[in-house]
Amino acid sequence: MAEDGSESPKFRSVSHTWKDVTSPIYDGLEVIGTHSKSKSRLHDRTRNSLSTSSVDSTDGSGKGRYSTYMEKEIMDQPVAIKQAMSGRVDFKNHRVNLGGIERYRDEINRCRRIICVGAASSYHVAVGTRQTMEELLEIPVFVELASDFLDREVPVFRDDVCIFISQSGETSSVLSALMYCKQRDALVVGITNEENSRLSEETHCGININAGVEVGVTSTKTYTCQFISLVMFAIFMAGDKRSKHDRICSIIDEMQILPEKISKVLQLNDDIKKLAEDVTNKRSLILLGRGYHQATSFEGSLKLIEIANMHSEGIHSGELKHGPLALIDEEQPIIMIVMRDSIYDKCMNAVQQVRARGGKPLVICEEGDEDIKKFAGVTIAIPKTVDCLSGILAVIPLQLLSLHLALLHGKSVDSPGGIQKTVIEHNVYKNLTEA
Image: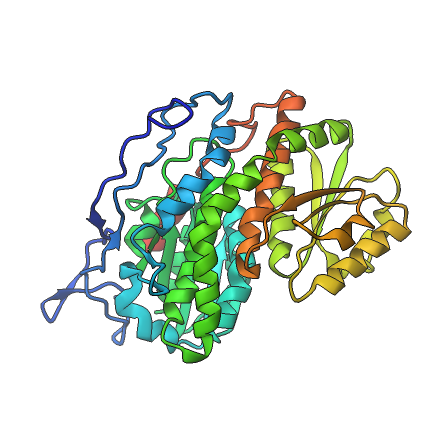
């Protein structure tokens, strides 16, 4: 039984594999790849397992003491993050083990570039972890919206690695982009919460984020679990690089205490509810962030749009002078994400520009940052963590804000109008698989 009174059965202690589609036999092995080409990439049908351990999993079967599944799933995030890391992160020896991609590790490290493809929140996860992957792997990482990627017919090559991110594993645009890359013999990697999905069937290898069932339409705990999974991927791929050893150790040390820090952020729920009451009659919200928090501004904006049905824009704060500054006045509510990282001074400059226009920004900042309080209208202070993990902590106040605004507006939080949890166009997918 979970603390909130809901049922929470044990997560099965099993080793599971990506399910494979029926494939032809080559030298005694079933082949995965582009079979129409004579020099197709050949992959053994045998998959490396993705291990999960016996960790309490909240399965979404009941709301417990919460009024909505979304709120429950936001509050589940400390457990979900532990579950995502369980059996994979060796905190004592500062190592990460991802059995599902072990056999492709050398091939990934030899690639010319990594292309991350997602839609909506999954796209934002890729934006938020791109800098970490580039830093640790020292390989260029490109992030693509699945629909735009297909519209442009992006050139893809055999020595590319394409990572496809979808919590359901059934998003139509992501699956179509996957088949497009697979037909061009790229190595395709999946990041999903559904081990039996089409994404897991079609990819060569991947990571199950182990977030547990997410009933609410909007991504909350699956967003943060996808985020930590891509950070683990970066650490795993860079694990043998001596030049990255100290950096990796600092990240893993923070990963160990990350669930505790998430719990501390969740204690701000009542304060955030009061802030929601202050802006409930506003027609629009602007969110500004840069660096690791460009993605945070995008994701927070999406939450406000899809759940609270409130117009919102997530904007890179470096672009403030190129148009958005004209929107700033005393009446326009603005949220800014400012952490004491390598671009702190640039973010402070943006805050000062907003103040000069009469704006009173609500700033999500680190605990103990007294300098930012001189310029912010209101601050939400979150625990300090390593820069590449701060996107997990900073997005949670925005999840809570969108939840409370939606409830104040009388919206259906778990099933907002016109939005579905999974969208797949079966005919499109069928045509691609038969091509």
